[in-house]
Image (cartoon, rainbow, N blue to C red):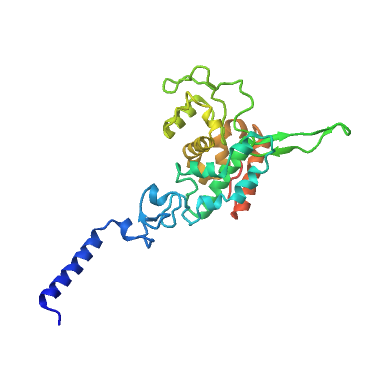
Length: 291
């Protein structure tokens, strides 16, 4: 029979074990997950918060890369979805070799709230809107002239073709004590959303920890930086109006030039991309499509 001393010792061991378990960090307790609702399950099966748990590879919980409905941005921007756009570019397009899905996903790690907007439908609409504008901003139009019939045949478009504006005659340099233009540098449009102007380059660089005022070329030569600047602009200038409808996002990006009858064909071009991408993602495009 077990002695009283031995039973006391066994009880002590059990109590110590319980207290140790209570005192353990949550991420240690939850190996292989089974996390509390407010914690993320990391790619290695531990619970916790922060980028190591809620970032790349997150399996469950409030993951940075997941929309509230549960679909991850990576699963929405699938290889089929992304390549379906980029494959429309001709082989001579710089963007075809520059823009990659992995570069987008890496850039997205710096903006985890993108694609995480209300319901799963809202999130997919936001992603569709972002890629609709990016497609339009970087597309190349080619018209072929028929020498036999003396007229232009149907235009051919290449998506994600350009990494920067073709017309570089305007430096887009505004007077700014905070973000003065660097000598000899141009701040013309670059990247998927065509980041433009020294003030935007300065603000984006400050947010990203990059000296884009002195090195604006990074936006057209580094694909991750390129997508980061596009997402930075989106989250600051476009995200606040996304729920107002796609038309509001057009205003936020190029409203002064295109909206109000300024360039109706370009507006319709953007709307066409958006509705097509919404269809691909299985969601209705919602109201207020035009600006």
